[in-house]
Image (cartoon, rainbow, N blue to C red; front, side, top):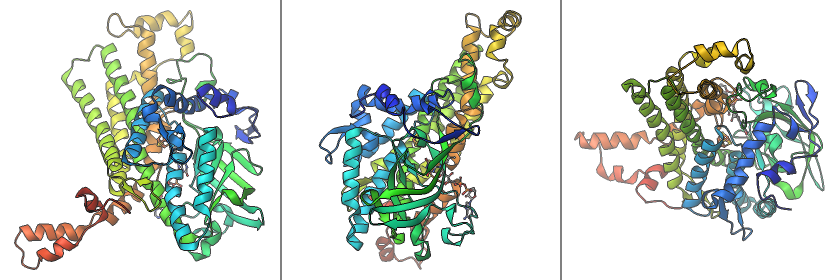
Length: 504
Ligand SMILES: Cc1cc2nc3c(=O)[nH]c(=O)nc-3n(C[C@H](O)[C@H](O)[C@H](O)COP(=O)(O)OP(=O)(O)OC[C@H]3O[C@@H](n4cnc5c(N)ncnc54)[C@H](O)[C@@H]3O)c2cc1C
Ligand code: SF4
């Protein structure tokens, strides 16, 4: 039965055979665990938005001939890619956290074009298999977790050079029905809330790494998979009585480590097997999509700007000129992220497979902004919030007959503002800048889709310095510059800007 809304999605996660460890113990039913449930609620929003606003959160798929959730849609035109960003901003606004479904969306789209090109060279059956898989998950409306990042051991060594071969996921054996993989993936967003895990290589590979060039889909509860839940700052507040101290009691992100121990992937779900020379293409296309998917953080930025404006109002300083200016600065930074991300999507072009891929330069600039601006926005939010954001007593103190009245008296803000509301908005700022959802707003912004240096490498690759030097030298009347040569040198980036290149 296809999943049609958030409640059905939550029900679909029950009674599975997942082996999830949290605090050293197996979790009986993740859906009912108070620390895990907020992350499930965040994914449920991706289903409900598809019903509430189908124009941005769903799409007509020519693969299945049906209207499908946009997270499972292969982008068929530029508008589809742009709408991914609109959906991500909206969901960020609705949840104030990571809603976990974009890694799967970006993985499917990058695999769509990469499998086509692998087949073209090696006459393999991957593209057709992938299309069948996509049709099936579109039909069932499933969540796909994208498992790329290996635990990696010594970062200066390639997969096959590691002392322990399991530090990167690799094929351990094969039979006529499929392959078996062992290894571990770190920081896996929403994996326990997924129906499927899509395993992919994490880095450019060489011939000696052939066994590591494996892409395949496995059900999240397949035999041989163990999950170890990642702790988030202040996460156990979700297990306390009341909802005040958690700041955002309904929603959170989720990361866990996935350990594969000879996990079986049947042939029909294998989409790369040994084509090491295509690992880089897959990773570059995935990170290109995913780095502009980080406009999700502008939805969180909208919430934090709103929280900062609210606390300034509650504190009676909303009209101070420096407060207004700080809110303008926060908005400027937030919209700069959105501007670069959505521009990257608007510059999408058609791949050989027929789907659409966004612009790499602008995607990397977007993600690089994301590694910095949310930290500055958070700094300004804490500035506006005042020190109480980190010194507030607990909900129990507010509810206690002894301390409650004292706090009511001494934590007053502007006349007419309830103290509880003041505390609630301060807790939300704490949640997003220091607490549970700072994982999503800050450190995920830093490292998710690649640490800052990864973007600088991509920007450097495409910045076309020689061409820019020639532009300068020509205008400066430096004789060595030849106008003819200048006209010849193009990059994909400028070709797309000037409309000279529309397809890959
Ligand atoms: C919250 C969160 C969610 C995530 N979700 C997912 C997910 O759903 N799926 C997924 O596949 N991945 C996910 N990631 C993983 C993310 O892509 C990685 O964190 C990122 O690629 C960095 O890898 P790392 O964490 O192992 O850090 P490291 O690789 O250890 O990097 C640490 C530092 O070392 C530097 N460094 C690393 N290697 C080298 C080298 N060879 N030479 C020089 N410098 C080096 C880096 O630039 C960085 O400054 C997530 C990460 C986070 C934090
Ligand atoms: S960090 Fe953003 S882009 Fe990545 S899965 Fe979470 S919400 Fe989506």
